[in-house]
Image (tube, rainbow, N blue to C red):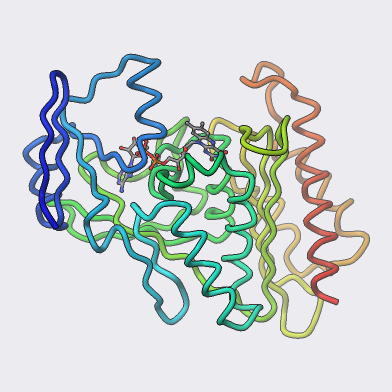
Length: 306
Ligand code: FAD
């Protein structure tokens, strides 16, 4: 595989083939932009007229373009395209016990509603995380699972962070340092008594941006309907994807029965108020959606538990 350099009038593209070369490049050009599918950066360049003099394409770096199996997770390279991830996850869903791949299934179910095939053919998971759009479709799922992100930089070496409530620090901002590169994402397998559901509401069924997206990850005590742990994440309800931590905390030790949705609504309404001037409008509709998407997930999980 060849290290390529394309030189244009305004921009030079580098396509290194090893992690060590990308680190050197990042040191040499601290403002270099990492670009995989270009579905976010391309929009910035074309419509917002941003200029990125140095672009690095990590698509050929093995650690970033493969999916490997570990004991409790699949480690997905940050430059793996959504389409490849979809295909590989489907193979795991075929061969592993069904309960183990509920996390993977939730992700591929959401990919049905994520952009169109052309975008999914080139866009990567890393780009979705690093862009940090508040209406991202995958970030709510990743946050409800608190996935582990593996980072690397010349100065900080290898470092891992969890995609929890501290990960996003503001509108399209996160805790990853400017010189760090996202190498991979660890997607955990689910356990026997764990269920994960995600739902997206958009104006149009296919290829549309979401209004609100919800992801619910719940684990029960063995052979019961008593909640051991639950994490509920929402997109479209704040300047960033958020975990409804208070709501989740209040639901621990509760039973998954008909009374649960009512209890949840009162917490959700308080925790995700949405200012009347919030960008995107549709304030009451979005508030209602937090509850109706939870209800849908509640019913789907109740059915799956039977
Ligand atoms: P790029 O444009 O290549 O990069 C995006 C950003 O991430 C850049 O700032 C880049 O520097 C940074 N980055 C990328 N990889 C790394 C890395 N390894 N380390 C550090 N930084 C990195 N999004 C949705 O959530 N749902 C949708 O339905 C949806 N539909 C879309 C439809 C269209 C028509 C378009 C144009 C976009 C859509 N998007 C959607 C947004 C976009 O496709 C996704 O966010 C996608 O995952 C971005 O991936 P990419 O590889 O193209 O990112």
